[in-house]
Image (cartoon, rainbow, N blue to C red):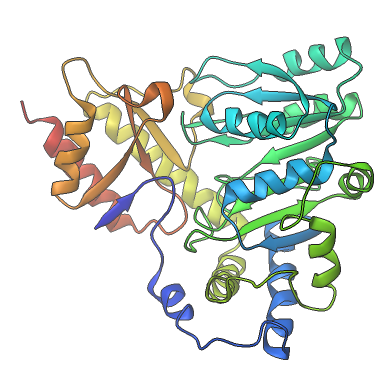
Length: 357
């Protein structure tokens, strides 16, 4: 089956094989030797000198960890939402008692850095900004660098959901001054779901020392302490760590510039192809279209679920829309392991199905 969703993504054979390695003692020397290697390579790919921690959890678990480790109940935060995952990030903060001020933009658009700056200037109580870098529900990439510049003008903490961007799109953590950055194994990292990677700046650790939201399994200070001796606080998903260890070596060998260029090229290819078939793109401004997932409007008179059913019957799986977009768009994922032949097959099948009356 040709899986063309924005996560989980296809896994290369050699990474699948890495998960078949025998189990080891997660308190023993084998794991203690592997974890620092994983951490060092993650720092290279995050482009950071900050701490990077690996949790046995989905990307959403990493998002929850970022929130509860840096915030306190009653604290005022700004949540920027341009789609389903921006909503999720802000709502997690609300669930734990934060006073969330929302900047909600039309789905298909980006957040305005200037508008972020205006809100921060007018509301002095805001301590932290929550933002999604790449919104897979709408196929839009936020101008994170410019948003960070506005946030830092007002000396605020910045928590970033980079689950579907880091490892595929440019997101230099230190250069862009990002405090907490979360990503997930099932996206561009070419590993099955189940690992979240979180970077924490010194400012984030300062916030952590004052934060009072409850946490146990997701205690990042505990994860930091254990990592110093090559361990995790809780039993790690050993097979996934083996897979991540190999995927990171492959990515470092390929090089970030080549990875980013590869995603840009396939993103351009998919967008041009679907437009040549008569489809229109969902993002309002094509210059902010994501290079990891393309969101496409379902044309009038076509049943989006039936379209995806027809492609699946031909061996190609596309994603539907989320929330209020469930019946109005479909999405093509192109991140991580994206062989040209599979992209070509997916586009050919879509063209075939689109011509069926």
